[in-house]
Length: 149
Image (cartoon, rainbow, N blue to C red; front, side):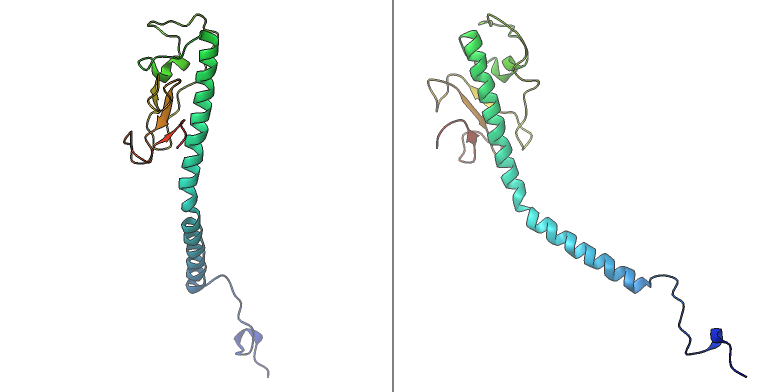
């Protein structure tokens, strides 16, 4: 009499799923790959912030020049960049208000307002527009502005 295949030691074992060890091994591999990706991409965050602040300054500067072209003068330091969003309520009033120049005044990548000075200290014939940079303190060497270094 031959033994039944289901009780045979030579019969293949039926696998119903993965073992705990196999699952933990796969999770560890995924975690290591994810950690490596985050480590290598971490340096790009600083580059992205620098690019964004440069783009914001360029966009706001362009809108300030359009404002000056349409009105004959730049907004005062007191009016600030809000003059690009809403009509001025103080003198000098713009001669015409066709539309907002900006939908809203953006903040820099470090969640601070951009600084606007007219006439500028570094651009006396125009205006200074700058971000205080990562240290959030104006007039330090990490400032990003519309002037040549």
